[in-house]
Every structure is written in C-alpha cells, then in structure tokens.
Length: 182
Image 1 (tube, rainbow, N blue to C red):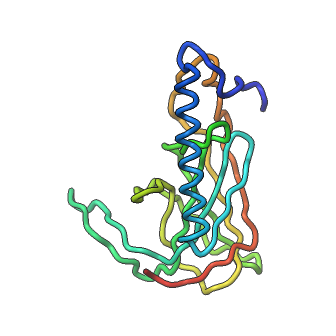
Image 2 (spheres, one colour; image 1 turned 30 degrees about the vertical axis):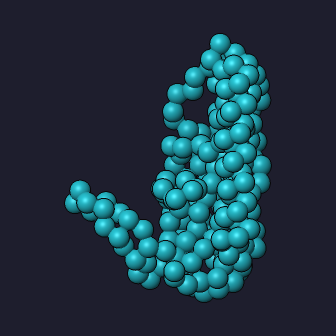
C-alpha cells in the first residue's frame, strides 16, 4: 500500500527545524541501539520493513520491576533463561514508535515452535523497547519473528501524518541465543 504522504516534509505542523530535531532524536536512538547490539547484547540486528526499522537484541534473562498491588516489586527470572527485546522505529527519521502491540515467535533451528508471546513496552535506562524474559530449551540458533499491527494512535499533520497504515512481520533467521540469567 503506497498511498501514504511523503514523510519528513515541512508543513503547517512541522517546520524544518522541528523535523531536523526529530531526525537528531532518531539518530541518537540508532546510536544507542548500535551500542546495545554491539557492546551489551549477546546478539542483535535491525532491518527495514516498509515504513519501519525493526530490530532485536538478545541478552541473559534479567530481573525487572513489576507493579503488584499498587507497588513496584523487583522480580527475578524464575525458569526464564533469555531476555528478548524488540525495537520498532520510524524508517523516515529513526524515532521510536510507542504504543504498539508487539508479539514475538521463537522457533528452534529444527522448525519447532518454542512459543509466541506479547512483548510489552519496557522502560530501560537508555533504550525503551518491547521485551520479556523467555524460557528456551537451550543455547543454539533460533528464528525470531517480530509482528505488530499498525498503531492505533492518531497522527498529527495532514501532509506527513498518513503513515503507519499497515503493521509488519519480520523474521530474523539463525539468531544465536546463549542462555543464562544476570
């Protein structure tokens, strides 16, 4: 479907300076993602899918704060042995796209489906992402399929806002997963 307005054009809603600042924000996020993939995560990558940049990072399972009975409580991984992150960005300027319903399917190299889980938005000290801890059978190569529908949020700007009409599905094949917990 290609009847979308061209992205990143000055308009009544977005002047050149504002668009430039949005691109800087996207560049900073891209640099942060590169740091996560290249220095922190066990594995990771990003690819373009139409209007989106879709990426992943794989780390050891990790503890997180969860809201329980109105309070934040730290919860360590139980049986989970890997943390899978998904990141979805606007391909036009590189900015993070919030408010998506993201699911990830993990398949073993044999083709056996390990599972499909929704990945909620997670706060991180420097990289918002969609993610969760998983339990996989062991270390090895897996295929990760990241799916999301088009976002439901309204879009400003008659000239630039007709975007994200469709969702996407991206498969990363042969992803090396090392198991463990931080």
